[in-house]
Structures are given as structure tokens and as C-alpha cells.
Image (cartoon, rainbow, N blue to C red):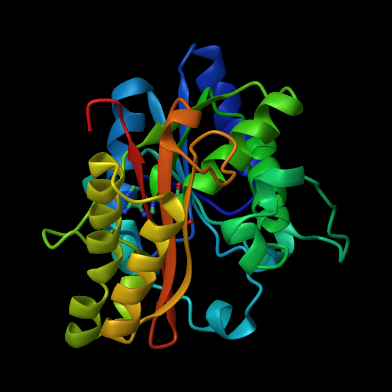
Length: 284
Ligand code: AMP
């Protein structure tokens, strides 16, 4: 695996790939790699000739300095995992390379960023859009792979790429879970065994809401009340639980209103913030 820390090194390699007509697949990450990330790499490997993974903990997308400070760093294990997955290139830039000046450009995604993660993590999607734009310009991939674990992020990036005519295809990949349903996340490394058990409430509550939606005996607002009761009983702080249109991510009053429904949750297990979601397919 080639490891590049500068743009010029990477881009001379990119030019040699282009001359050979090779297709580049890109998986951006913040490291502390787990099966979720690896599933993206495997998809990229299947669809492209060369797979580039980036590891960069992006400061501008953190609204909580403590969360940034405590973000897990397992770079040596990550490199080993990437090699095992036959990843071709690791791009791991220093902070100064990606942010050479103090200028932080602004994006406005309108209603898409006014809900859920955007509402609760101030400036988060501005930071995401900024780093994804920078990385797409540097890496110049044919396809870039993102996990549906971050559903709102997928919609933001799809909007960004479409609106700014980025020459890349965005590929969404399904959520990878532990056997107990907990969505894999780098932040899970910060959970002890009891907390991990407690964290299963996120997926359980998504399944419960899905079942209630299917039964059609409660209104959406009563389903949300029932779910919030579950969290109170479990003594887990629920930040939001939303039932939305999977495309616009806006609240809905009835599932008949939209083509596809998504149920999205954010909750705290002690001070660790976790998110999860379930997109309902017609047959589900
Ligand atoms: P992160 O390192 O958390 O920024 O994540 C990098 C990429 O991996 C993003 O596109 C995430 O959506 C994706 N990802 C993280 N966790 C999972 C998971 N459990 N299943 C699928 N994709 C994931």
C-alpha cells in the first residue's frame, strides 16, 4: 500500500493511473477503522481498479472540542487493516495541509441541514461539505463511497456533488451492525461492556418504531411519544427521534405522504453520542 501525505505526491501517482485508464474508488474516513469502513473499501474494490482511503480527523466538523480531542486514533492498526483489504493508497494529510489558512468557507444546504444532525451539531455539515469538497478535488475519484449510517451526510454530499457539478459518482453503502444490532462506529471504542449493552436501545427503538408504523394504529406523533418513553425507562438521554421523508429528511405526518421513510435517532450513552437510522423499503 502506498502512503501519501502530500497532494503533489498523490497527484503524480494519480496521473500515472489515468494514463493506464484505471478507475479510482475513494473511501474518506476519520480512522479508527471498523467493519463499517471495511465494507465501503470492499465495495470500492469491487467497482474500481484502484482504491484510495483517506484518514483525516476533520476539525471543522466537530462542534464539541472535547469530542474532537477524544476521537480515537488507531493509525497503526488502521494501516494493517487497510493492507489486509488490499487498499492501494492511504492519503493521510496533516491538518495544515487541508487547512493552510484560517479561512473556513461557508455552505448553505437550506432545510436539509436545519434538522437532526445539522440542528444539534452547529456547523457540522459545513465542516463535512468543506472537507469532502477538498478531498474530492485532491483525490479526483471516479466513484466515492459513503455509509448510510450517516444518512443526512449522504444527502448533504449528494446535494453538494450535484449542485457543484463534481465529476464523481456517489455510492451509498448499507449500515454494518454488531450481532446485537448496534451500528458499528469508531465511537463504540469509547463504550465499556455495560454501555455497549445499553446502546442497543438505539436499534431496538428503530425496530419498534418500524413495527408500530406497519401496524398503522398510532399516529407518528404518538409513536414518537412511545419511543421517548422507552428511553426514559432505560435512563438514556434521547436527543432526537425523527420519522422523515428519506430524501428531504423533513418530518412527515403519515407514511403515505412519501416514497421512502427513514427513522433516525441520536442518543447519549453517558457522554458518548451515537446515531443510527433505518430506511424503510416498500417490502420491509
Ligand atoms: P467516519 O470515519 O465515521 O467519518 O466514517 C467514514 C465513512 O464510513 C462514512 O461514509 C460513514 O458513513 C461510514 N460508516 C461508518 N460507520 C459505518 C457503518 N456502521 N456501516 C456502514 N458505513 C459506516
